[in-house]
Picture (spheres, rainbow, N blue to C red):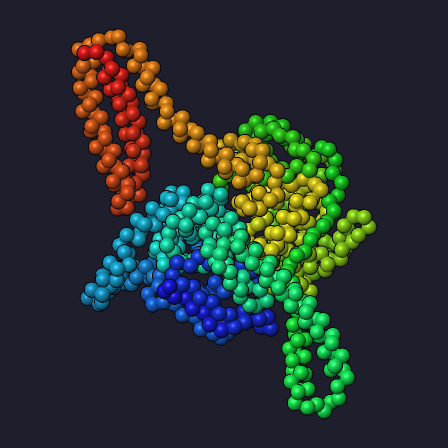
Length: 623
């Protein structure tokens, strides 16, 4: 295989904190690698170093010559005054820089170096850059190219950044949390896109279905070291457990031998012969293994929810809209005790607004929501990450409570509680501003759960959380003795946690589905298949019934003229349809032409069906 990227002895530290130490990593043509590690272990730092956005202390990084690299950042940023289309020219990929070089050359007297630039423009296909940008944006359901970036939602901004990354058709794609803020439809589109292409991938994601279906190799960063697994996420889980078991056996064996050797060390005099010195050196190596504390992150969070009565909340004929956009229309619902509901739907269908109405942050236009007296909400919102940057992690939690009640007389100190969420004693006494994005999310989650709520409302809780933390949270929610509402695009998380779904289809079309997300997706696919079969069978049934009605009648002069005319019209329409389909597949259309022909194609198809049906009716009449 052709090597695309080679990293040797890479070391990166921030002051006293060594994040990466002598890391070695290679990516070859066709490899699809998922990078897994706890928050704060250096995943994003490593990707930024590879992309050239951050420096490093020592080591070597080399790419194959002329390799085209695309990088999707975790939180893309653009100047607010840019339009969507301008944003695609903002981040300096090689094609954009070449276009700028061409423009500068044309503005310079004598156009120095124009011939070479024109050759490079042809080679990079830079002439088609804007058109390609519009086509990819359209595929990602971004069609208002003049809309300003400041008016985009988080999901729309992520899609613009994704289009920006894919436009240049990179050979090697680096993705940092690509599914964050993407709705389920867009996540599945990206999944299918990556599976169809021959791109080489290096990506960080917490979406375990995405990892399973896209990646062929998993790399884990643990204790500043890298472990590689040749397989998808399911294979990684199996082999990682084998590694943990083998390490634990090694530590146990070393401990047994260590006790014996320690006794020998204590008995031996200071003056030792050659053999004794060799045994002494071996003892110190053994001591390193015996004193390992292998953290397999197998933690269990068991915080007792406060008592909740039988009345939770009742929504009665609730209406909410923003102009022409309907969110809720005559919505009524009675929430049951211990119910665990998932909310899914595309961005912009009103999921977060519904949550905010429930929490009293947004007022309904009409109708009532009656909350039970014993309900004690724990609300994790998308925009709730507001900490004093200069506070220590332990102080953030102690400001809420020094001790957390577990029930049955059991308690946890604030420090012990933080350890359940994988905050080491060192990290607990570190400042908030030093935390990674995922660690901040984890801390925010701690501040929500430690208040002993009995009704958890979690709006996109999985964004930026590492897989290890997600496993802890999933187990906690499965055993939680209270009510849960989860808005999430993480399909694996939803499958593990919820009992049923509230599906937001847009324009206040809300359906209750009795199952998890995978069951809902299977049901949707089966329903679509049945409707397609039904639609395919319908013309045949119509034809048969109409033939029977006309079989004993003779064709009139007017009908003969119509019959001949239909033959000509159908032939012309078939020719137009073929022409449109060829144009749509050519990739040369402007966006306006693409839109026009996309609208015209179903019209032509309907006309062909309609006229063919009439032609079939007439053809069965005796002349």
